[in-house]
Image 1 (cartoon, rainbow, N blue to C red):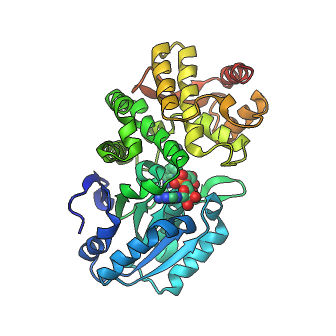
Image 2 (spheres, rainbow, N blue to C red; image 1 turned 45 degrees about the vertical axis):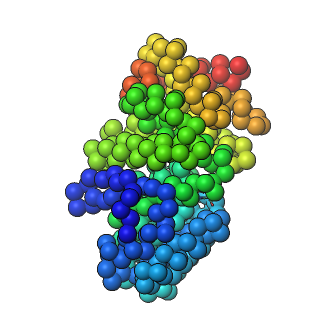
Image 3 (tube, rainbow, N blue to C red; image 1 turned 120 degrees about the vertical axis):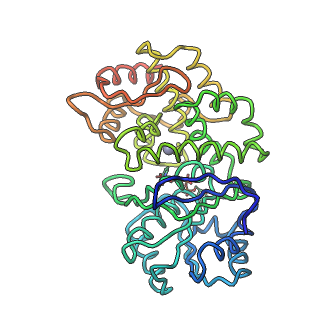
Length: 372
Ligand SMILES: NC(=O)c1ccc[n+]([C@@H]2O[C@H](COP(=O)([O-])OP(=O)(O)OC[C@H]3O[C@@H](n4cnc5c(N)ncnc54)[C@H](O)[C@@H]3O)[C@@H](O)[C@H]2O)c1
Ligand SMILES: [Zn+2]
């Protein structure tokens, strides 16, 4: 059983669930599942890389608790959020004769969580699933909130459902095998929670980030604070009709950068795009006389200190012209009455949804940034 973990409650009436956070939780997972879901069987969905590092310990833990389970391993990487891999996972779940009361376990990063959650959302019109996130991004962001889905040739995450997990178990020890670049990318989302509405948390990160990276006690604290922040936003706006959009701070610019670098992870990964995007959002806010240059400098300095890119010219290769970036932004966004919706800021911890940003002002700003 897991009793020494930090617990964050996600309060969504009949869809409420716990997030358990701590080091070494995989080993205690079997007993915890046996206690919570007596009589259930499981299918573990994971990717090849995660399987190599962490599947044995999870399988042992389930076996020790006398739980029946099968294992479905997919190729690592974003390409597995596809119709064909979705079909093979559905097939694996049905072949294992899992029934409605049984559970899927998503062991992996955001790709595995999104894919498995979508399968769980639709197989037999909805099965329960447990998120066991193994990347920092997944532990602080994608495993919480119930957005699931896959990509299509028309774009990312265009097919999916809202389907909340039944339990999230975040073993922070699994992050020790994560490459530093991926850890830093996930950290961009951690810093984001401070920048959105918690200046105290941002200041705490400025002091404690080294301990977060090296796996000290601050790591669990940072993950728990991030989950609390996301859980709060999801509680007040589960389906993103309003304030949940604040979680997109830095993401309009970030997604556009991901898109024009063709989602080539050698050039840019999501969190790096978000880091550059958050700095651009602050710079743009300074330009609009909303934010002080000091708060922009603090944001940039912190992201820079942890080793994240903060400027577009740090992305290898050409980014093309401002018009290309602008086209990518317009593809990602709905333009309402000729205006764009952006997350802007009045300073650290003071982000807000601005729905009246003129596209030509953004274009001019990008033009200037790209030509240095
Ligand atoms: N559902 C949501 O709310 C939400 C939010 C943000 C992002 N996402 C999605 O999350 C995905 C990105 O997630 P990600 O960054 O976790 O990517 P990922 O799942 O592809 O993981 C990144 C890489 O790290 C490897 N890996 C995972 N855990 C590891 C570990 N402990 N040790 C060593 N290697 C490990 C994986 O095999 C993969 O190669 C995107 O598809 C994005 O759309 C979803
Ligand atoms: Zn993100």
